[in-house]
Image (tube, rainbow, N blue to C red; front, side):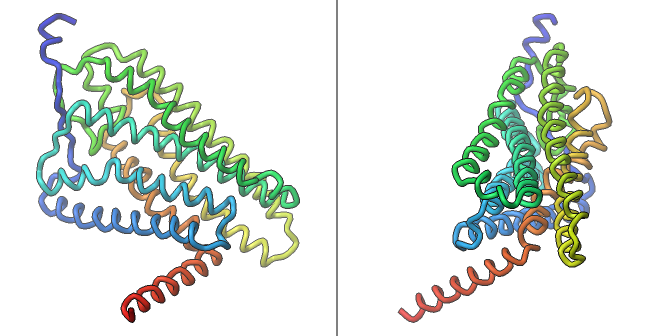
Length: 319
């Protein structure tokens, strides 16, 4: 690269909108604002009932409360910026802000992969080794597992961001995405991205494929155990829970693996944008309902929490 190219380093990028038409913009603003509000409120409710209700002080709901907190952070990394750009018409983002968004997006995504694998393992022990469940999934062990998920997610992404921060961006500066993602960002670099691309591919393969295999293997063992259940009612109940969990896991992993476990500068970015909506927006919305709010225990705990809240409000008015 020559010096003239070095002097034209891009410091501001422009993100694209999902829809170009005014009607599409209005529909997207209303729809995604509603989705964001439902996602935050739904996951916040999960965290509250998991903390307040003693009946939910179990390893499964401990993991679910961390998943709910993660989903709130995950959707907040991308959606508010996209809504702000749609409302104000200002789609610009600085290079530093772009890398920051990319770091938190990658870190939280990696953490979710690890957490889903841990949750699948927890269900495997509960269903396949019920007599050993409480001796294996102790409170201390669960805290260690969750700590490893969060720390591993944030540490594993750091090397990729550091490499990207050393790249030169000489123009154009239009990112073909509604947030700063790796694939469209690397396409804008005017330096050799082979080393960065290779590292990202290897990390994505290890994190996504590795955690996916652990998750699928755990669910496969659960399925074989469920099919051996003699009671038809018990089999239907377990199968319903298993199917709903597997649906969310399949959507999340299949889209993530398709987008990231391949050379990052290849592929059609417009199709990637559609897939990105699934794992950045819809999955955080669905998780509260799929994993928690469909469970009888969670529904009962929610009713108890609501009754307590109404009682406190009534007392505050009477004072």
